[in-house]
Length: 203
Image 1 (cartoon, rainbow, N blue to C red):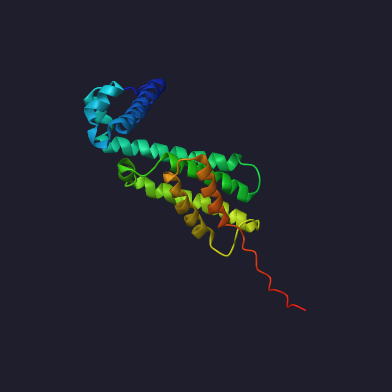
Image 2: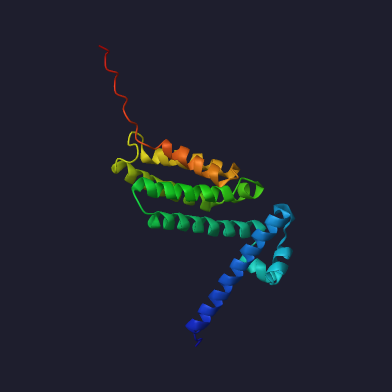
């Protein structure tokens, strides 16, 4: 009768496999950043990672698959970071939203559109992440509207879409001052509209 592997042994194997995946993803991303997407091969990745090609193919079928796995990990980390910003931001609902939008703008600035971004954004994980982000920002806006800090004449989901689209412009900005202005202008569109009082008739 075959005996199962000891638990510690299994955990060690899984830890090793996870480490190989991480090293492979990080190495591939670095190579693509240095040489360009079309210039990176599985042989280069295996050599730089310090594993055999046959071993590499056990983990990933091609370079695109490695990059998509790397990007999925990056996206997940970004969402976790935004959640941490929300949870640790002090102040009102609108101030928490401002902190999250500023953090999102910073992420957008660090990841401008290019050939690699175009390829990565075809991944199925992107649709799920974008929906999660929209829901996340929608909830913050709804909190602000309930507190009368943000406008309530437009649906929170619509305002969330407006914010996220507006902040993608951060990818073309180069200064922190420009990022702050973009966030400020975006937030200005969320403020409650103050009714204009009719002018009193003269004398």
